[in-house]
Image (cartoon, rainbow, N blue to C red; front, side, top):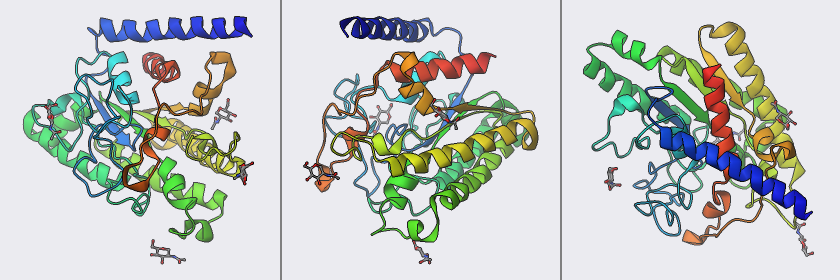
Amino acid sequence: MACEIKAWLVLSLVLMVACMQHSVLGNSQAVPCLFVFGDSLADSGNNNNLPTLSKANFLPYGIDFPTGPTGRYTNGLNPIDKLAQILGFEKFIPPFANLSGSDILKGVNYASGSAGIRQETGTNLGTNVNMGLQLQHHRTIVSQISTKLGGFHKAVNYLTQCLYYVYIGTNDYEQNYFLPDLFNTSRTYTPEQYAKVLTHQLSHYLKALHHVGARKTVVVSLDRLGCIPKVFVNGSCIEKQNAAAFLFNDQLKSLVDRFNKKTLKGSKFIFINSTAIIHDKSNGFKFTNAPCCTTNEGGNVFLMELHAKIGPSMCFGMEFILVKLQT
Ligand SMILES: *[C@@H]1O[C@H](CO)[C@@H](O)[C@H](O)[C@H]1NC(C)=O
Ligand SMILES: *[C@@H]1O[C@H](CO)[C@@H](O)[C@H](O)[C@H]1NC(C)=O
Ligand SMILES: *[C@@H]1O[C@H](CO)[C@@H](O)[C@H](O)[C@H]1NC(C)=O
Ligand SMILES: *[C@@H]1O[C@H](CO)[C@@H](O)[C@H](O)[C@H]1NC(C)=O
């Protein structure tokens, strides 16, 4: 047992060092720009001025972030900050809601806490920027880049070099399908149908993104929904929710395969199996169901619980993206 813990520690340290080395090296950027679509796992301040309970611009969020709370749903860096560091960016990717003083040619983060693929998802908590709106925001940025670079064609040409990160769908379950009192999706669709409906809608968004230049896109599968701290009851995961996530992930994987092999030839989609990365014992990572702390804003204990400290497993996932980009 002690030995096992030690091995785990050593591996974590090795990976953390690897992770830090990249952030320190930082001189050769793997890609010139990074655009981010997603939810609270990636949001870095887009919800700060929206009327919603899903925000994180107050303590204890940001306790370990250099400038304190920013709207990131973690104590310190979020996964996207980590990814930006690993890819060699000198600055974090700015949120669309506050681009003051930022170079949009380096990328923009459109992610919004509580958002999903579906329009109504998360609206139980207030307003959010759903995937469709995130894409509209991206179109605004594309036209600004067109102005900067002297034409749409030049802009799209530049945009083909960027990396696009898409991690969305968790809330279509947690803030929609599994809230039957508030949403009718679980009465309208079986889990199989719902997974198809969601990935079908997402496929339109990914194609639209392709139209405006995306050629390197990371698509992240859902983690085991039934095991996130909010859902976890009495020390066990809710298997029904895990099963729903697996159905979605299988559809997502086939979509990515289809895009890579046929429909969107010439683009590279990188599928990240978050379950494999976070939970695979052979990676030496221990999954913790214990949040570092909880918040109780507006009677909702749901935020920090979901996004406890980012551990080395996150680093590992991001390293994986870098490796995939280079092969
Ligand atoms: C907007 O971003 C700038 C630069 O990162 C930061 O200094 C400022 O505090 C932000 N403003 C708001 C309202 O978050
Ligand atoms: C489900 O709810 C939506 C509003 O969120 C409504 O537009 C739709 O008609 C409802 N569908 C069914 C089958 O009740
Ligand atoms: C959790 O455990 C408590 C006490 O054993 C029990 O009363 C409760 O029903 C359990 N909840 C669920 C969702 O299993
Ligand atoms: C992801 O990884 C898990 C664990 O290794 C595996 O059970 C699952 O089938 C994988 N999912 C996909 C879509 O490849």
